[in-house]
Amino acid sequence: MEKNRVFSLLVLVLLWFMISGEFFETTHSLSVGINYGQIANNLPSPTRVAGLLGSLNISKVKLYDSDPNVLRAFIDSNVEFIIGIGNENVANMTDHSKAYTWVQQHVQPYLPRTRITCITVGNEVFSGNDTALKSNLLPAMQSIYEALVALQLDKQVNVSTAHSVAILGNSYPPSAGSFRPDVAEFIQPLLNFHSMANSPFLINVYPFFAYKDNPSSVPLDYVLFRPNSGVTDPNTNLNYDNMLYAQVDSVYSAIMAMGHLNIDVQISETGWPSKGDPDEVGATPEYAGIYNGNLLQRLAMKQGTPLKPSVPIDVYVFALFNEDLKTGPTSERNYGLYYPNGTPVYNIGLNGRLPSMPSSSSSSKLLGMSPELAFLMFVIVALFQQLW
Ligand SMILES: *[C@@H]1O[C@H](CO)[C@@H](O)[C@H](O)[C@H]1NC(C)=O
Ligand SMILES: *[C@@H]1O[C@H](CO)[C@@H](O)[C@H](O)[C@H]1NC(C)=O
Ligand SMILES: *[C@@H]1O[C@H](CO)[C@@H](O)[C@H](O)[C@H]1NC(C)=O
Ligand SMILES: *[C@@H]1O[C@H](CO)[C@@H](O)[C@H](O)[C@H]1NC(C)=O
Image 1 (cartoon, protein in one colour):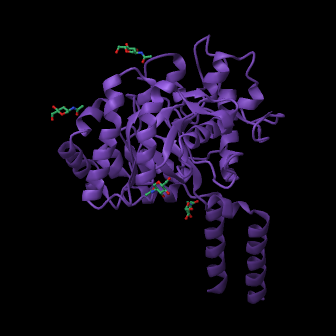
Image 2 (cartoon, rainbow, N blue to C red):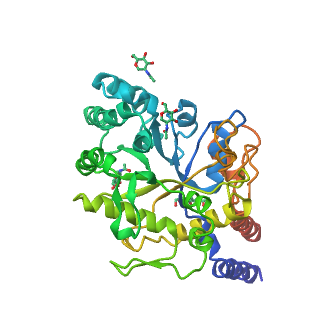
Image 3 (cartoon, rainbow, N blue to C red):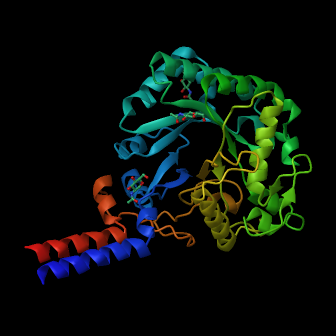
């Protein structure tokens, strides 16, 4: 009798696992990274953000600075960090001793308990018009790298910089991708550096801009990852069903055209705004939800681009929160997946929860426990009650 009840409970548990393959899905960390921008005056504390990201099981975060409050809040969290050196600080970093001191103060103290795995030096430097900054970029990256080597951290921390796709002169067809002639002189030695240091080439890619600039000729389905016949590259016969992959492959082609075949390309930013000015066509919660939702599905499938089908795309979505203090058009303040109060801007099935009170990441993980886990614990408790 007693044994029978235990047995039927076990069968129930087994059935639950068989029916809800979801239990296993939710125990995987999301393979998407997220940009945690902080140009705002109303964001939750980093400790609460650690709780939110823990409940989402997001394990890759990109910062634009090296905010000690954030890096401390993520101690022992297993979240990988890309941290940033702002453009305003690039010139200083060309000085070896300043670079060494910077790494000693902003990287070394946090390792290994906060997992800093990459430093970006500057953001979109080559699409701007500051010529001194352009010339300083590589020397700054080199001194940061040398500082890491001196501190024996170079194997655990990469050095890179993030580019805008505006550095491409030609991006269509993808096989004909090439860098703008005026930036090529900077890119060639930069690629030599990536190759020597084995660090990834980072690119910020926004199909939204292409659509917004030309809504009548850029097909919406093609930019939103919806079913469409795509475009075929006449040189390779590869078919592209979305613009993001086409732009990434244009970057691969541009790099290969400069003689480098083994440099990884990663997407340091992509996203879609949920709100814009009247002239920003497509900036709606509906399209933002479709873009980011479909992107997450592609990531879950571990898809590569047509040119590199076996290399899963590596993406940092822009951004975690809407940032109210960003300047520029309305869209700039509306790229977030979340409002600062932790409410999702649109529903794409992310069931994250912002802890209401400051809490340690371990207790917030318990709060963010999945229903499957809760059910499992309930069953275990029930089993114990049966046995004793
Ligand atoms: C989160 O992801 C990690 C790494 O894949 C996994 O070990 C862990 O069980 C996941 N946790 C949850 C609550 O899904
Ligand atoms: C660059 O270095 C100088 C001298 O050490 C310092 O005064 C200045 O604040 C630094 N600039 C930045 C942006 O950190
Ligand atoms: C070029 O530089 C000027 C002055 O520094 C600046 O105001 C302007 O926004 C820059 N233009 C671009 C395209 O970056
Ligand atoms: C550094 O980048 C290379 C090339 O993309 C990659 O293989 C390696 O895992 C990265 N290292 C770390 C610590 O993330």
